[in-house]
Amino acid sequence: MIGTIVWLATVVAINASAYQPLVEVREPLSSTAPPKCKCYPGDSCWPSTAGWAALNRTVGGRLIRATPPGAVCYDSFEGVPTKNAIKCAEVALQWTNASWTADQATIPMIPLWSNNTCEPNTATGQPGPPGGCSDACSIGFLSQYAILAKSADDVAAGVNFARTKKLRLIIRNTGHCFMGRSTGYGALVINTHRLSSIKFENKCSLCDDHSGGVVKVGAGVMLKDVYAQAWPKNLDVLGGECPTVGIAGGFVQGGGQGPLSGHYGVGSDHAISFDVVLASGKVVTADAKNNADLFWALKGGGMGTFGVVISVTLKTYPTIPVTGMGLTITDTGDRFWEGVRIWHTMAPTYTAAGMYVWYAMQEGSLIAQPFVAPNMTIQQFNTVVAPLLAKLRAANVTFMTTEVRTFSKFGDLYQNMWFTAFHSSGLGAYFGGRMISQQDVKERGNDIVAAFRKMSDKYPGQVLFGGHLVNPGNRIKDPEQKLSAVHPVWRDTADIQIFLYLPPPCMSAQQRAEAESRVTTELGGILRAVTPKSAVYSNEGDINEPNWQDAFWGPVYPKVLKIKKRYDPNDVFWSKSSTGSEGWALQDNLKLCKVT
Ligand SMILES: Cc1cc2nc3c(=O)[nH]c(=O)nc-3n(C[C@H](O)[C@H](O)[C@H](O)COP(=O)(O)OP(=O)(O)OC[C@H]3O[C@@H](n4cnc5c(N)ncnc54)[C@H](O)[C@@H]3O)c2cc1C
Ligand SMILES: *[C@@H]1O[C@H](CO)[C@@H](O)[C@H](O)[C@H]1NC(C)=O
Ligand SMILES: *[C@@H]1O[C@H](CO)[C@@H](O)[C@H](O)[C@H]1NC(C)=O
Ligand SMILES: *[C@@H]1O[C@H](CO)[C@@H](O)[C@H](O)[C@H]1NC(C)=O
Ligand SMILES: *[C@@H]1O[C@H](CO)[C@@H](O)[C@H](O)[C@H]1NC(C)=O
Ligand SMILES: *[C@@H]1O[C@H](CO)[C@@H](O)[C@H](O)[C@H]1NC(C)=O
Image (cartoon, rainbow, N blue to C red):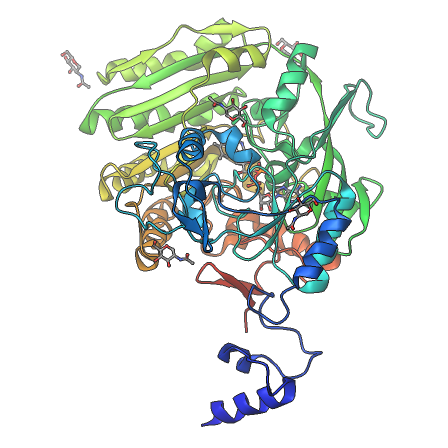
């Protein structure tokens, strides 16, 4: 009854002849009151066609209506026929190609974050959906509009439009975030992947503590692009291991770790300047002298939340020699896990030597390849690793090692020894993870490996692990978080670990929620219980991590939150489980609304 009265009053107040959807009844009547949700298609506040056209002119025609690329495998999209067997075969072929995915306007690397919408059948390459899934292609959780930005002006136009029209805004670079942060229903996407400039300089004019040079990289540059130019110049840039991750985007804003982190520290420690578009649309520089608080926050303090980074300038270093080796353990049952226990509990000895160990693991197979030892000779390497191999032998664990090799620079090791699992796009996995501290490994190392086994046994064949045994605090301590706004555990870590849970295909909304809760509560719960002194890497964890503020940023959080509020008081930027996101929540993965 009350509902009816309000409904009538609303209709009369607005326009007796205009149809308003029933949901509008709950909107505040006063036009000055802030809306409860961002504006979405179908809302009266959604921009008109003329409004979009005006934005398009401002950005030089670089606004696109983004149709899901897989639509060509389906009969139609939004009522328009789309099926094209030849184009579908191409999409099916490229679906797992991470470079191709990075080039797309809106789709995520992990299709779960688009609601697996309009997927091609990668098994057969035939036009049509994967067997058993929906045969309709709809927008899912994707955005319809994207600006393929070429300049800071394009980005500023997008920010201004989203702010004034109260749209959800997504900053999308490569779409690599496996936590789903670069995808969003009904958002205006600012796609930064085409900001691709790379400029090296021999000197660092802004530095007082760095004798090397710098490289200024555009927001869209991927690690492989900067590596491809740095290595021939005999320069190292501290990036990560995945070739197609963007260095200026999520990587630096989440901290960033890589194969040389035991020697050089956290990725963001090396940033000396950012060009940024603020929520106001203003383009500013953030460095030690200008906007110093923003500069600090952008170094690990949260992705997609302080502004749109246009470029970052990073320190470069003359290359150093590296030694590497691969280790695989293939055994079964208790002996497999005993091998893992021996190898993992010794992580502090490798990390104390500045080493990094990349690994992928599932019941019956550990691939720890490579061990990366910056500036160590083969002899020094063997001294560190000999006790591990002796213990594995004594326990009769079946294992193999590759030849130990020294390369004159990291780039050569990377090209020769890297095991490239997980570098493809299209993976059907939910992720969780934990940055396991030195202290936890030293005090509870056996319990931690027992927990891995318990997780693996819980959903046999559906739980995989990956990780990086490395301590970015090995040489670069930063006890007062002056260099980077990262959780202090970053400087006392033994394993930056990721686990994957492979859910069944073609899930309903209900099954999706159950799968996410398995990751957060069951699997995540097992690991949390044995790692009380650990944290979570904000880029490599569970998007639904409970108390994420503390897990991702710990004691640093109050300070980065204050900076977020100073630079973006009206939440133009919002990124799930990133700094300052607590005032809003996604409803069923769709609309972003104020938390009341
Ligand atoms: C296969 C794989 C391997 C990985 N390996 C490593 C590794 O070795 N080391 C490591 O540290 N991490 C690694 N990561 C994690 C990676 O650093 C994060 O996923 C990172 O967020 C990706 O950033 P992006 O800009 O490429 O991706 P996107 O998904 O496009 O963006 C990620 C987040 O950053 C925001 N963002 C992007 N661009 C900008 C911008 N210009 N301004 C403001 N916000 C922006 C987005 O809004 C989103 O919140 C890996 C990820 C994958 C998938
Ligand atoms: C924007 O303009 C370009 C060039 O005129 C056009 O190709 C494109 O379709 C327009 N985008 C939208 C969303 O209308
Ligand atoms: C992957 O995609 C990139 C970018 O679109 C393309 O250049 C490359 O050829 C593709 N790789 C393969 C194997 O098709
Ligand atoms: C997401 O996918 C499920 C399963 O196909 C479907 O039931 C649901 O309607 C989809 N949601 C959206 C918003 O597309
Ligand atoms: C590499 O090791 C050598 C010998 O131990 C040392 O003299 C040199 O300073 C190290 N180089 C770097 C960059 O740490
Ligand atoms: C390993 O195998 C040897 C020979 O078969 C045996 O004597 C020894 O007890 C085994 N050790 C362990 C720890 O199982």
